[in-house]
Image (cartoon, rainbow, N blue to C red):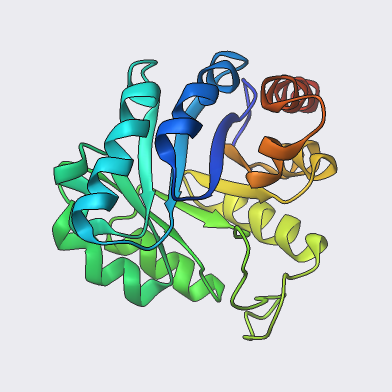
Length: 222
């Protein structure tokens, strides 16, 4: 396994937004609370011009802090929105979007049904692979990558992260669907830990939630 000399960095996932202007006002405190590497912006469906405007509203708040802004899918508008890249769900969607993103922008791969799909994404030029997914989760990979419904057991996610960290240099992201999953994913070897959109609804506020997650990451690395 790659030796970890520093805690994994955080990767924040937004809710699926249709009002990014309002969300941009409050996101600053969360981004300032810890070492955040990237924000995955999930946009509600709309026409192309509206999607670009919504992304730009968040970009100003995120990129000013030297944090990467990635769009969830929608690779076709990344350049016009001024985003740093896109996260694509599924090996087919990932490979189809590569020409729109490379070589200048980040191409992240998630929704990988099997170990084989993860290796295919890496070989094709992914900048990272993500294990675990924001809801709705279209399948449950399990240990053998068999498609199914719902979220896989957390133990299967840990196992996938450990396998990747032991064999590959390409960064991997472990998706934490709850606070208690943050530290185990770091201990499994994740380079980044993604915090799901649950962080924005915690009673203590997003900034305090992000701070607590960062403390869990720091405690996971000797």
